[in-house]
Length: 434
Image 1: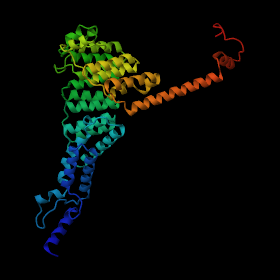
Image 2 (image 1 turned 45 degrees about the horizontal axis):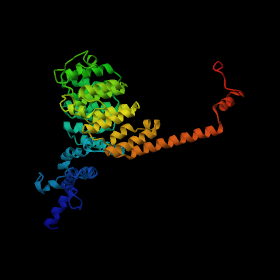
Image 3 (image 1 turned 180 degrees about the vertical axis):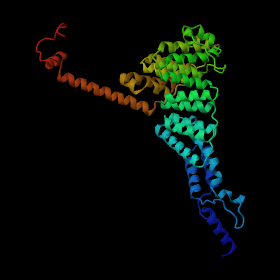
């Protein structure tokens, strides 16, 4: 056996990977990074799994060592997967950012959640310490999936590995508990946050307002909203309104950190809508934005000098959702028009908030006309889910009409039907008899 053959034999014995035609650890790591840059989540995850598989199949002494030395040689590092595992754990989370994904479907979201759960298991097995941003990414995935159990596991793992949670981590966890319906746990997280001396932010306040709204505590939501308004430049605008005394009856301060942001404002609109207070909802919107639902061109021009809040897409969607839910479709369409006038483009989600299975079953023709209106005037694409909702409601309406016609053909009049049921052959019973 010559010297080169002996060298290759020893290398193969030590690494278990050299001598094969498969990719090296560095190859898989570079491929994973390339897929992340190209926004290819499936490809990135495939290479990540290949890297993990290579790590598990390697022998304990995965790094190639020389025949007489006990230290790895730098030129042999790319042959093993182990030097790249922790970097791979940190970088693969980029494919799980929900905010960078538009129009994801339920199967897509379930796939992301499955990846996130697998990532937590693999990271825990490698004793990988999560960064604060990694915790937020995982919590956001499980929040959108409404998986409170998985969010609890992420929080426990982060705590056990020594992650020092900041306000963004607590906000992400509170949001995950809210989305999953774990309201009791959400209150516990808020208390834990204050006990540890973490100063809440405006997003903490927004989530707390939503939490009070979900649990039916409207007055506590109003008091929390008052905290935000007290330290905001729009306080004077609201105090002069008809709702001012209601919101400012208990002024409290929290070290002066709170201020009214658009997120807090949107959550308060949602609480009012959830409680059916539509008039108060519109009044609050007008007082803080300077806009009425049927704003004229002069009002829109005056809005440029208004120092209040500037509504965003979420603001209009809260108004549209709750007006459509309570079957005020004319107002919902007017809000869409105002939305467009304010420079916020209606999107397919806007139409989905109006055309729901409940509204379509109530009046399928009105929902169909609104879908056509938004498509022709604002270029809103009618999604397949909206088309299915309208078609299903129309089929139910036609089936109901057929049943009514069949009943009328069998029993031409109500009096004859009543006569058959009661055994009466004469005229209808008098009010006194009934």
